[in-house]
Amino acid sequence: MRCALAFFAMLVILQACSDESTDRVIHSTIPAETESSLIPTQALIISGSVANGEDASNTAVLQNKEVELIRNDGVVVAQGTTDASANFSVDIAAGALIIDSSFSTATGLAETGTAATSLDFTYTLQVKVPDDGSGRALGVRRKVEIAEESLTTDRMLDIGQTALKEVTAIIGNLAFADAGVTLAGADIFIPGKPFFVRTGDDGTFSLLFVPAGTYTIRITKGFYIKDVSVTVTAGQTTDLNTITVGSHERNPLPLSSVLPGTWQSKCYYNDIANGINPENPRTGTVVVTALDQVAVTGHSCLLRTFAAGDSFANFSKLMVLGDGAIVAKLTSFYSSLITSYTNDQIVMDIDNSSLASGKIIEVWTRSP
Image (tube, rainbow, N blue to C red):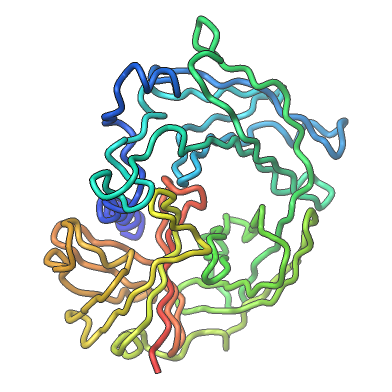
């Protein structure tokens, strides 16, 4: 059920935030002659290879690694995988690089601002190796210049070899003191920051490209909740080793009693055309009188309607699942929100593969 809800959650956000994101990548109103001179409109392939810049002899860790082409508004344009020789090719579908010129870089609407063009967007190639076998996380984010005149006659763009270097990372292993709790599917994230990961079957996790600083890592699974402080240094891997979540580290508060009240919301996601990034979140006020009586003033990314305006006519109610997750009921969709909460703060996140971070996160802080 949760998988189905997560699938619908992605559809909800992609539609609900459509007037505030640059995910409109197919229908372009840029004149063809102008568009083609700026960016390719037909299918193309970006090829290259990766190398281990820390240990040239250790090439096995470079195999079967995901290669992503990410636009600077967060959209993952295309993906590929390295082969046994660390070579890769990323197939980009026709029209995938086209942006909608009716979208404004200032206000979201060209009629009231400067229309977005291909010049407003850049593309980054990203490769990650969470562990090279010696405790280091390797990675690279390389800007790629994509222009029609750079392609070969068979529409190939070879960017050559790129060396992966050690990058800032937080890694660890999760364990539960209670017997029978599976290790997979726990959320590891930094509240209020676009860094998330979900543990695999063995309970391991890794957060790469986290800027240097001191953070609180939050671990949640169902009603379990645990915060761990960590200080990371640029270009180094911080190993938290095994983190055990104890029996007492369960939220004793029923979520249905926590939700009612007035909350200040912050929605963290990438929306470059509107000047929104994880360090500049949209804010608003959410008032929950009851689980079926919710009012929103300003912005709530997770409680938006499909239609423009502030009527929220398509929003029905909130529901709480047995494992502590909130479900937002809209007219045709159920949006599943993984939830971490205390009496004074609620953190909700949604998987969204169209974002570079892979997530949208919203934080509610209770008003005094």
